[in-house]
Amino acid sequence: MREILALLNRIASSSKIDDAWEQATGWFATLGFGRVNYGFTRFKHLKTIGDPEDALFLTTCDADYVRRYFQGGFYAKTPVFRWAERNSGICTWSWVKEAFEAGRLSAEEAEAVRQNAAMGIVAGMSVSFPAVSSRSKGALGLLADPGLSPADVEALFASRRDEILAVANMMHLTIVHLPQLSRHRALSPRQREALEWVADGKTTQDVALLMGVSPAMVEKHLRLAREALAVETTAQAVAKGALLNMIFQRLPEVAQAAH
Image (cartoon, rainbow, N blue to C red; front, top):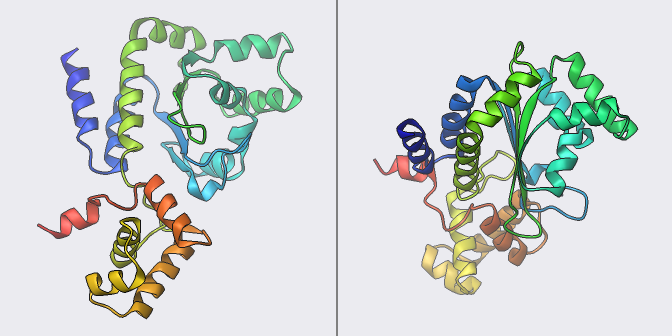
C-alpha cells in the first residue's frame, strides 16, 4: 500500500504530461503491461472524437503499431473502443474473446480482433474514465505482454484491480489538468499573453498598453494564435486555449526558464 500511495503522490506532483505518463506506465510494466495506450479528447461530437489533432494520444507501443493503431484509425474499429465510448470503469478483455467466439461482434470488430491476434495481442484490460463534460472522453488500454494469457490477466484483475484503477485514475486526472502542448497547437508566450488579456475582457488598445506593443502587433499575436489553434475567431481561440490548458497556466518551459 505504501508503494502505491508514494506512486500516486509522484503522479499527482507531475508538472508535465510526460512525467505523469512515465510514472504510471513504468508501474503498469511491472505488472506485465509494457504496452499501454491512452487517449483523451475534449472535443467529442456525436460518434466522433472531433479533430484528431486536438485529441491527446499517448502510447508505449512501437512506431509501426502507432501508425496503424492511432494514425490509421484502427483503434476506432476495436470492440474495446466501442466499450469505452459507452461505459465508465474497468474491464478485462475476456468478454471480447467470448463475444468473438459467439459471433456477437460486428464484421469490423471481428476483423480487428483477428488483426490484433496476428500481432500477438490477445489479452489486456481497458479503463474508461468518467466524462467531466458531454464533449470529453478518456480511456486507457493495457496490452498484456507476450506470454501473459487471458487467465493470467484475470488473476491480476482479481488481485490488483483497485490498485490498477487508482493509478490509472490519478494519471488521467493529472494529465487533464496539465497543458496539452504539441507542435501543431503550440502558442508563443506573447500569443498566450494576448489571449489571456482578451479573456480578462481587455480591448485591443488595453492589451497593447499592457504588453507594451502597438495595437497592430496585438492583432498579429491574436491572428497567429487563431491559426495555431485552428479556429476562426479570437473568442474561439480563448475557449479552445482554456480547454487545452494552454492559457492561465504556469507552463513547464516558463518555470524552467525562471531558474
